[in-house]
Image 1 (spheres, one colour):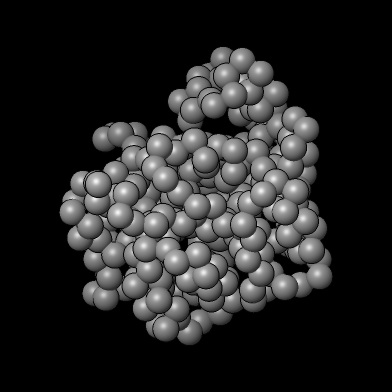
Image 2 (cartoon, helix red, strand yellow):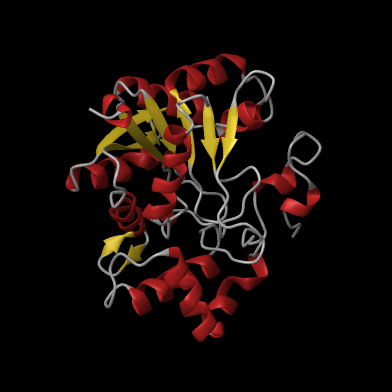
Length: 271
């Protein structure tokens, strides 16, 4: 049995209805299914054996997310509304994870090959890393976020995190403290960086229009379209790129530049 087959890999997808910028975004419709289920459909294309868990809150507003999970036979854990790090840890612990993968629910265009390649980095280096991502620094189009951590790493992160923004964003306490964690990073292709030029994530209604159009154009002809397929589509149809162009580069870093030591102003855009 290969090393990876000995590990239980749990993908935790945190989702809530009370998004401040686009409430209810995870259940917005995309070709007959919710955005969340379309994303999980794509996550499950990874070649690694995984267990997918939706981690939502105990807030009544998130009852509909639990209902959506039950309808689609997806495991669901409910925990703290504000302490997402705790929620992440408890969901992984409940499902006896050895290796935990964080993929945010605002990444409905996630490419399963990107997940595979990031997991590959962890195993190809003999499991020496506590944490591997494709975000520090980021090189993929925004919305291909993959963060992998051992259960021990996640446990230590939960014990160390104190600031509200560390609890909310789950993993910065890890990558902000390389003295405590052995950290690896997967880059896309040498010389290529689309993280500040392409936006595949969802936070605004313009992002929804973009994502919906990508699905409408690609899904009927190639249901498991890749990141490169999207880039090719945008080359051929620049009007789609323009749908959410004004938000390209906008991310949560912009609100915490004074707190973050490993993120520069060039890795975010102020609005």
